[in-house]
Length: 377
Image 1: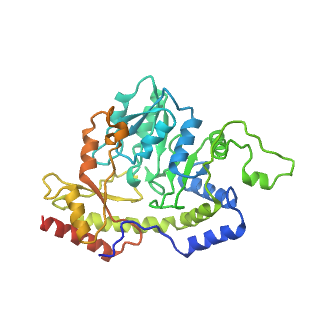
Image 2: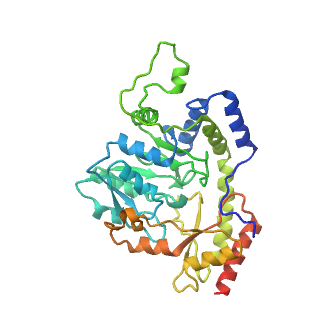
Image 3: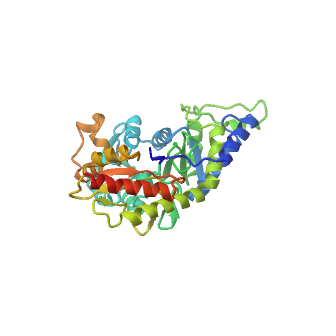
């Protein structure tokens, strides 16, 4: 085997000590580490408020419910995304309406949105695909023109920037993932950012069974100050041990971003004129975080996407398929529209190894294996 890992969390002694300190503090959930993570994440994303939750999915679900999106409503979403972006709309009782992508960025095509708007449309859920921010300004303008909510699926884009501004405060709300493959990870978890104080307060109640007081507030209150439950909520909390790891990850994010950028530059320099592979396209006004490095087979390539993946695997190089076409999965296939750009991208793209620990030798091993794969085709 090559020794090249596909992905690896950027953990060190800092995260180990942070977790241990949280355990020693006896704050298990809802304590000072959660508050620190929420405040730090909000500051990073240029938003006023952060709400930590147990996953991206639970966070997006809470948000849709809090914004009144449910049965009878439609939400426009790209199909080219991890299926959670679509499933959560169904969980809320609404109907996903699939939009086509821009074939260069793989993000939702703003020009495709307007034709999908109906009297039932309530919101647009654009996705920052694999860490490349979507055209959020154009999408927000469409939402304002038609009276629609815009919720940014920023699951992959912590630390990325759009026209110089950080991702997090550019929509009604943005939802981030803290999954193991994300740049800031707590193992599992999620974060909602918003500038709406009332919305943030409601989301905090909703994540904890609708409770009027947080654990942190109850801890410092008089013994006869009792919580109330003004509405039905859920248990979508993230623990303080997880939050402590997240705080350490936020502090190391600039280093992680720089290391990923260096890997991406090495890949792109080698692949920019490659005969069979097309490297990622990055618009000049966008700064990705390089959560993933997705390449695409050029027309007439000597291998299929799957053939290339198999050939690289045989040389000890791990890969993953590119972003999936959610509308082709069984729950959505029967009523889905034809989306040719989405379907081609899903069939022709793959992800190369990408993580901060991937050194020059690792990148060289990947590139050499690619050349060997095509030479042997």
